[in-house]
Image (cartoon, rainbow, N blue to C red; front, side):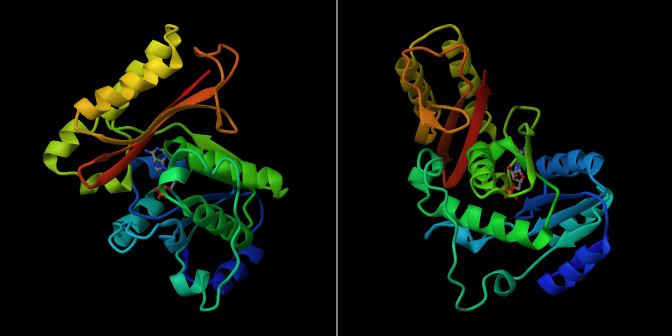
Length: 279
Ligand code: AMP
């Protein structure tokens, strides 16, 4: 397995390889969700590239950039087991040298949901993903629906900017009790970890209610109430149309329109997001 921390080293390797290149971008602290991405991509490409880079531009002021978990040795061991061909581990300076001043921003899908509560987050995401696409030059890139808004924003960027890269997503990988795997779950105290699976349970309950024909506004209101009663501080609990993340105009769930029920909450100091895709 190759390991490169400079763009020049990566580029010289990239020029020598042939066949399809599958790319899985991550911020490290790898868990079973990342492993599943690597496994799926491994089956689908000749060369598998993993990037580990905690991207500072997607963190807002007062977020956890400096204390974001770092488990590099374990990440490399996982990469080896999952038969990664090359790990790209650039430094901040390599990606954003002093005087760096160019950003790419998607303007519509980036606005609702996490866009409202994490100003500048998706601008940081689209900028780093485009930069990594330009460096890695992958045939395909794979993302997780755990971060569904991120996936739809990236998919839109790829379409709008005519990038010749196939982007796909895998379903959210969960703990047996339903909690979506996340590098941030290690921040949860024992008590919070016990409560955390309620997030997905409530999402699924409200999904059933919508499928049973209850009004959207009532279902969302009840969802927020249930989450609040279970000690979550709710940032949003919303139903939006896919893939453009627009508001649904109908009173009840339409049968012919894919949609996403998505939520972000704080449990203590830890921010959790989750979603269910419908139709
Ligand atoms: P991160 O390292 O958190 O930036 O995530 C890197 C990639 O892993 C993104 O495409 C995420 O959506 C994906 N990912 C993170 N957690 C999960 C999960 N529980 N299931 C599936 N994909 C995930």
